[in-house]
Image 1 (cartoon, rainbow, N blue to C red):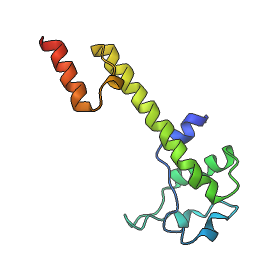
Image 2 (tube, rainbow, N blue to C red):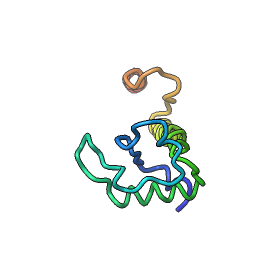
Image 3 (cartoon, helix red, strand yellow):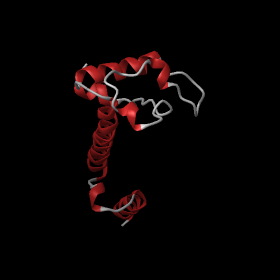
Length: 117
């Protein structure tokens, strides 16, 4: 399992368990029970917890705070990959670059103008 495999899937975080700053200093990954989702009233799937455990080991996490600081980075990488794939796909099919427009509707408008004029 490589770096991209670890961070490309939606991860988990023990939001309900984090009741104060002292929990961020914990030096071990919290048990699976602490990843209980109180909003959906469901337990954490073992597969998701195993993924978090692999991330903990692979990235040499020392505290829960390190996970909290790393989550936005993982998300940005994923969003960047998705946007780059969109950009490549649109360019290959329509020879338009989504970076040259501000919104998806304006991209659709540019595409419409290209094919109707």
